[in-house]
Each structure stands twice: as structure tokens, then as C-alpha cells.
Image (cartoon, rainbow, N blue to C red; front, side):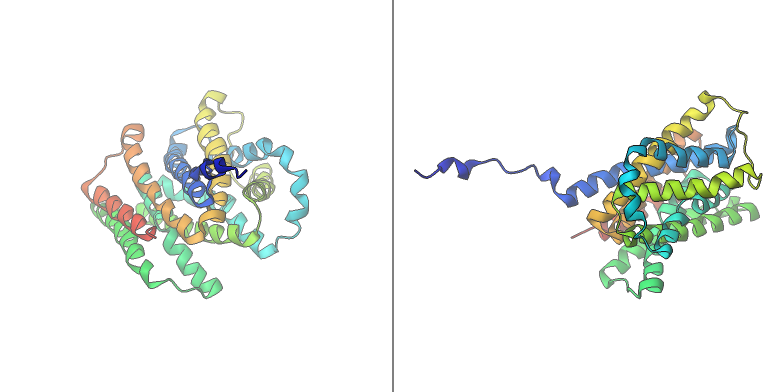
Length: 303
């Protein structure tokens, strides 16, 4: 007898589809990135030095992923040095450049000028490194993102000082660094956990000698666990663990350009969250700029 019940078998949950899973994970990452922008601004008001927060950022993922290290040592050897270098740019260099830029700007600037311009940075770097041209259908969305970023910066021109201009320049450099990191993630061919370990272990190897030799300032022993707790939660667990693995996972499911573009939603969240948390005002120009960036993001992700 024919098994007619086979025609009525429930289908697998669509949430398990790779693309949908990639989007869900990336939305979580975007929230974490918004928290990253706020925490980078908060470093200056805390007793911790930038190196101390960076230590938290890279040490916690290593401890959390310690059991996964032995089985991934072999795959690390297959990564080309230049691709590993691109990934490591997203570690200590990116962290310190953003920290310096954040000191002279605002959370809205950090979000807009780093996450907001990353799609443009990726497009430029892919053109330079891989001779990959930007498809014409992406010109308008990327143009809107650029226009929104310019609007955010131009809207604060009355308060613009030489120090703020320096901060803006550093954040734009950080965007290029993050774009290189994004491309490096795709090139390594590693899974999300392996990429997270590569970034964290490599960055810690670079950071520890800088701290021990006094090349960078450190205030270890001068702050309490309570004072470090916000950075442990946001930088160590959030950015270091959730976003590092989540972003690599999203790239593997959605691709480099789409992941970087959707990440541009972070400025909107950072600008809004900075109002109650940091007391930073949301100006009309900033609000319009964030809205334009968000529009560009959604247009870029249309099928």
C-alpha cells in the first residue's frame, strides 16, 4: 500500500535556511556594533586605558573558545599569510584607531563613519585588490549611504574643530581597515569560530608585548571589576565573541558586500542609543543622515 502520509509530512522550518540564518545572526551583530560605538566613547570617561579594554576584547573569546583550539590548529596552517594579515588588521590596529577617533567625536560619528562607510570601503578595496567592479544596481544605494554620512558630518560643521577633524579622519581610516578585515574573513576560507580564534589569538600576541614593554598605556590594577564590567559584557562577550563569530558566519551565508552593507544599520542604533546612555543630542542633520543611510542599506539588500 502506498504511504499517503508522506505527502503530508511537515516541511523543515524555513528559519534554518542558510540565508535567513545569516540575516538573523547579522541583525544581532548590528546591535552589538551599536554597543561597540557607545563603549568606545565611554573609554575616555572610565579608569581603563584603551589597551586594557583591548585586552578584555581579545582575551575573553580565547578563554570561551579554548576547547575549539586544538582541532583548528591544522586549518590555521593552510591560511595564506597575506589573508591572515588582513584579518589581523581588524584586531589591534582597528581597535586603537577607532579609540583615538572616538575621543574627539561622538557615538554617531563612530557608528556612521565606521560601519556606515564600510560598504564603500569594501567596494574600493575589492576593486583595488581583486579588480571587482561595483555592479550598477549598487551605485544608488552606496551613493545614498555616502550622502547620509556626509550629511551627518556636515550637520555639525559649526562645532567642528581641528581635533574633531582629526577624529573624523581616523574613523574613516578605521573604515578602510574594517573593509580589509571583511575581505580577509572571506579569503581565509575558515569557519566562524576559526576566524574568531585567528583574530583574537593573533591580536593578543601583538597586544601583550605592547603592554609589557610600556609601548601603550595600561591601568591594570587601578580599576575594579565593577568598573570593567560594562566592557566585559559589551567588548569581551558582545564584540569579541558574539559579533566576531556572528559576522564571519553571516559573510559565509550572505557574502562580503551584503554583510558589510547591512552592517550600516549600526549608526542608526548607535545614534539613538547615545541619547539616553551618553546624553549626546540627536541633531536634525544627524537624524536625516541616519535615515538616508538606512534607506541605502535596504535598497542595497533588495533581491
